[in-house]
Length: 155
Image (cartoon, rainbow, N blue to C red):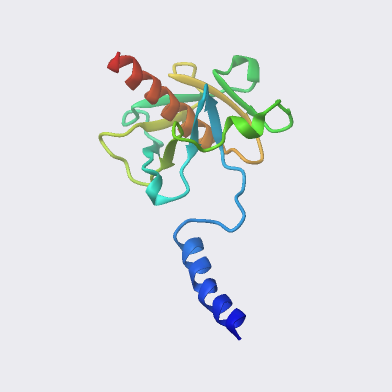
């Protein structure tokens, strides 16, 4: 009888965790390794992410990201079929992990990304992936680039 009571009290806690943004079985999240740190797409509100948004209007964009057709033309390329040694460890969450979140609303203080085919862009990306969307890759690259620029200004 005690086991039933313990199980009955644990089920609501598990459901609350899932609803709050947790997950029972962690899945691979889009991320990029930055030395010992990593940049990941945020999945929970407590991760305090950098917010980016996307626009279809090049005039309102603060960052332009070109989608290229070949990986050798890109500043950042994502290809699922390649295996890299220690890939699982390179994007583990640690104290140096940063998060980026894709927002539906444009904010004047956060990056606004315009995806383009034009060569006049701040970043060039190539994406051939089942886990990364072009928007995920652009958000991660812009977030990582912004973090590097902020660190350069601090020194």
